[in-house]
Structures are given as structure tokens and as C-alpha cells.
Image 1 (cartoon, protein in one colour):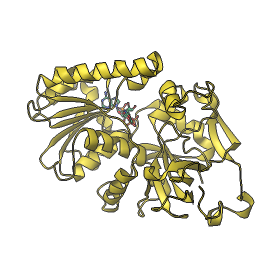
Image 2 (image 1 turned 60 degrees about the vertical axis):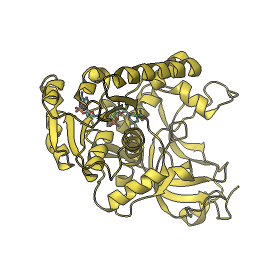
Image 3 (image 1 turned 45 degrees about the vertical axis):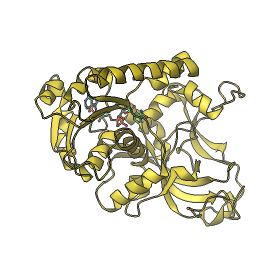
Image 4 (image 1 turned 90 degrees about the vertical axis):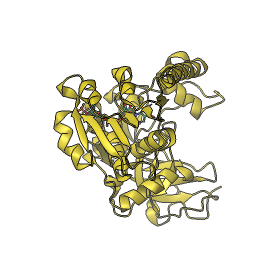
Length: 375
Ligand code: NDP
């Protein structure tokens, strides 16, 4: 399965040839920050399928999902994905490496990988059922990987893939937006100042939409700088009141959840194909709580009944999900190279400061992304 390229090649010193272990931050059980453990003996990834690549990690992005997964979020659902036949013992996911964004360099390619070569600079969003990027190396499928924008450093590049592929999946795949159908569309982004919001604002603005965001008052100038046309402070009182006074919207991206569903769909233009897409769904909680089969049935029933209820009022209700995609990242790279999108790195931590990086993400109030420099 392996390519004829030497395993260590020019990217690794001869002392690292034929390594079986690598440095990584791992967890051995779910819990709060003290479960994070640094080890120099994490398993070195092995190519098992011909479409896989090993990437040497230069920078890793952290997201709220890493904090949630550290605490056990999605454990049942992700275990099913890792072990569909359910033949492994409970806890077989440990030691688990977190970190969903990677920017780095291809170190080794499986035999069927044609689009990448050893030494290529790449970026990727890592699916949550795979080992993450808080390690010296990570294993990915080639279709999850994309050549990184040349104009970005690895730190900057690691701020984009997870939030970008999430926003892409929600806005393009679920919301039906494209670069050629956004002109004159009115888009509302609830929760504009975090990782997903700062990316989504720039993306739809670049495609010509009129963009309204909600955020705290102290993020207003920051979001106007990213292209928001209209900013509404959610801390000044019930945010639905100022939003209701505005012209109605063609699409709402909800990064906030909670009670937003009770008022947000009334802000859409009825009977015009307008959509509400929320990223805050009970999907994982349902499968964690009820088991995979019952949890999926519960989720299907919930989303179907809500979609039907809102369809009768002339608007579309949808759930959005992260979807790994090298192809989406290729398109996003072109937008970054064209200076239509810039990375928003709020804070950078060294590899030895991973617990502090988790503390930062856990505090909330993000203004962009938290990134860890790995090497
Ligand atoms: P971040 O933590 O990076 O950002 C959240 C932002 O929302 C912060 O800037 C926060 O700032 C702001 N905020 C908090 N409360 C409100 C409010 N009531 N109104 C407006 N803004 C608010 O999160 P991400 O951007 O990475 O993710 C956003 C959401 O999307 C999360 O809930 C995440 O779990 C979910 N998500 C879901 C995915 C899926 O596959 N379904 C994938 C990725 C993310 P402040 O508190 O200072 O106002």
C-alpha cells in the first residue's frame, strides 16, 4: 500500500527513520482539562488504505468541539464510526488525540494518491472520528486534504479548515448558496464573532451578499472590518426586536442555538425559498443519550417535524453539519489567494501550552480562532 517514497524522506532526520512513536497530546479518559497528557510515545500513524496520506503537522487549530470531545461529547456516535462492527472493547478510542485543523507538509502518500507528493504544503479539517492534529503527524484521506494557500503561514492556515468546511457545508450544501447566486441576497449570521462566524461573514460578503450579524457590542468594529454591512448587539436587549425591524432575510446561519429558533424563522422572507440553517443541533446528544439507532430516529423525527411546521409557513428549516472536504478547501484557497478571505487568529500557543489553549477556547467569547504551533 505504501508508496515507494522513503518513509522519512527529506522531511525527517535519519534518526526518525522507521519511527513507531511520536510526540502528542492525548486523553486516556473523558473529563476536564487535567485529562490532557503529553507523551513522546503516541503511536505513529500507519497508512492502511491506498488513498491515505501522512501529514507532518506544523500548526493545529482548536475549536469548541475539541473541548466538548475532551468531555465525552459524541463518544457513542464517533465510536460507531470508528468501529462500525462494534468488535472493539469500550474505550478503544484511547489514547485519543484532539485537534480538528491541520496545516503541514505531506510526508508519505498511499499508492493511489495522485494529487499530492511528499513535501507538498497542505491544510485539512480532520473528521472527529479520526486522530487529531495535536501531534507531530496525522493520517488523513487524500480527499480530505488540499494544497494550502501559499500566502498564509502554517499558523494562519490552521485557523481556517474546520470552520471553513463547516460554513461551506451549511451555506453551500445545505443553504444552496453559490458565488453566482448571492448578489442582492440578505443574509443574517447569528453569532458572527467566533470561528465559524468570522469565516462565514467573509465568504458570503465576497460572493456579493448583504450581511447582517449579531455579536457583542465590543465585536462590532471587528466584524465591520471583516465585511459585515449591519451589526446588531445581542447584549443590548432582546435581539429579535431590532432584527424584526429590518428587511426580511433570504438565509439565516445560526451559530448560537438556544431559543433562537423560537423567533429567527419569522425573520425570513416567506414563500421565496428562504432558509434557516442551524449548526447547533441535538444530533450527537441524541445518539450519545439514546444509542445510535434510537438517537438517529429521534433526530430524524425532530428535524422532519420542525421542517414540516416551518414549510407550512413558507420557510425552510435545516440542520447544518461539518463535512470534511478537500474540494471545498480548494475553492476556499482560491478565495484566500484572491484576498477575499483572511484568517482570523485570535491567539497562538506553543505545543507545550496545549492545556492553556484548551482553557482559552473553553472560556468562550472567541474573536476568531485559537491555534497551536506544533513544530
Ligand atoms: P466560537 O466559540 O468560536 O464562537 C462563538 C461566538 O458566538 C463567540 O464569538 C461568542 O462571543 C458569540 N456569541 C455567544 N452568544 C451569542 C449570542 N447569543 N448572540 C450572538 N453571538 C453570540 O464557536 P464556533 O464559531 O466555532 O461555533 C459556533 C457554534 O457552531 C458552536 O455552537 C459549535 O458547537 C457549532 N458547530 C457545529 C458544527 C456542526 O457540525 N453542527 C460544526 C462546528 C461548529 P461573545 O460570547 O463574546 O458574544
